Amino acid sequence: MALDEATQQLLRTLAAAPDAVPLASLTPVQARALSSSRATAYAPGPEILDTTNFLLPVSGNSNIRMRIHTPTTTPTSVLLYLHGGGWVIGDLDTYDSLAKNLAHESGATVVLAEYRKAPEFPFPIPVEDAWAAYCWVVENLEQLASLDAKLHIAGDSAGGNLAAVIARRARDAAVGNLASQILIYPVVDHDLSRTSYLERENQTLLPKAAMEYFWGHYAPDAQDRKHQDASPLHCTDLSALPNALIITAEHDVLRDEGEHYALALTEAGVHVEHHRWLGQMHGFIQMVGILPASLEVTRLIARHISENEQLESEA
Image (cartoon, rainbow, N blue to C red):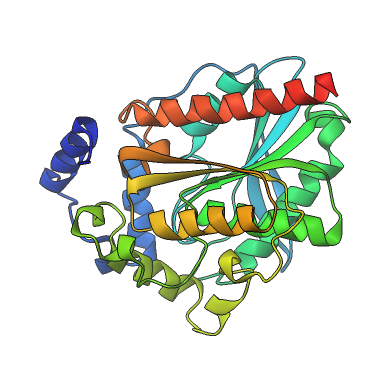
């Protein structure tokens, strides 16, 4: 199946834009500026009952930005969302529309966490920042929703990588009680030789060269890339992890590794719901108001969260 018409039109528009240069040709600062400028085209997202911003202290006498979207006075779930961007680009503002839609559609409090970026802060610093954000959410669950609220962790691309790592670390450290992990076209391995990396039709906004660029900044030491905190697929024990909702895109270089991770989790006894979104490329969920599939997947995630609440009420 080919890319859908909305995606093809977007790619034609971006190719004709003055800033149409390969991401791998940019410095990290230039890449961040390009990402921010493109995000101004996203729909602003629905009105939310309350939005709170604050700084969370982390290691190295530093802070990371956090944003809480509370959609109702009685949320019964909390979703911690870790944004994508190859560990190099992306921030709260470029993901704000998506976060608002997730809160609006699910009724859950959505906590959007930033983390320090490579190459200034390479592996494992983003992992440690994500863990700090997760621990804060666990400690403040009652204030975010209720003491018995269902807790979910989600992320796309590099954020999906971090979400998978944090889900495993939460299991190992017995911190919190995750209802599920929601991984959207996650990076789960450093191996760039899979078929999906080589298919010509997948070389869209995230071609193979861009992933080489991101890995080069995030984990320049090839040995670090083999660590389970960098490549979750290398974890030798995936058992007893929270249920997983995994979304992959048909025309995405990350498609195969995400689907291999879904299979590995299933073989380890984890309940997995996997959807390959046909006609879509990498990054589509972020493109609120531009690609219709963004809202489709957002609503799928909302149903997943609601179903967890329903199961709890019936237990």
